[in-house]
Length: 104
Image 1 (cartoon, rainbow, N blue to C red):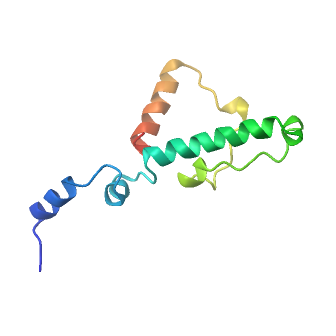
Image 2 (image 1 turned 135 degrees about the vertical axis):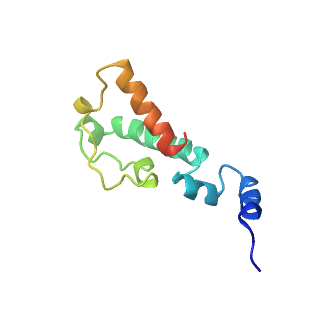
């Protein structure tokens, strides 16, 4: 049995935005809910770490979940000095790039 392109397109248009198929086609690895949950877990882990003896000494920082889910776990983390923006336009450009790449 073979289906035509219009039939396949009609079936695909009925998929939810969080479906694995639509996420795979658009290159978005995780849903918005998964993104927010991972972000919150990372922030809470960081807050707890900052209150610990290790946090006071700036050692043994917890591993972040979100970069791993987004496939960025192989990249080196940016230092605090290099993570800022020089202008509002730079920030807005980076925000738009992020939104386009991850659908958030």
